Image 1 (cartoon, rainbow, N blue to C red):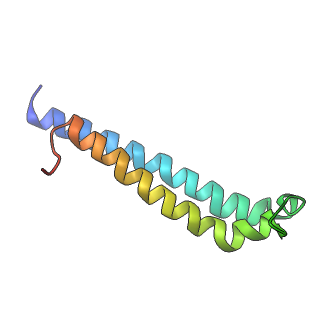
Image 2 (tube, rainbow, N blue to C red):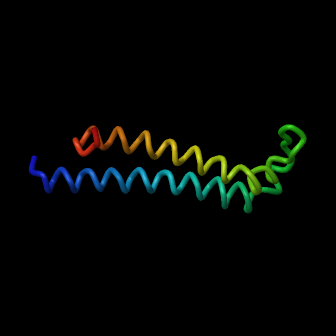
Length: 86
């Protein structure tokens, strides 16, 4: 496999990871925090309605978790394609 093919495969996999994580973020922040927040308000966690939690804190918490997942996932991809830092 040539270096150019390897690089194209690397970026294809990188874009796949980014797309998946952006979809998760969209679902959590927009769908759960706005579109279905009223339905989620029927569920309470520690006295707070779940829709309220997603709209105010859930998106930020999920975003931080997604950053961690992205770093771990990309480190594995970097090692797979031998483009990692030592």
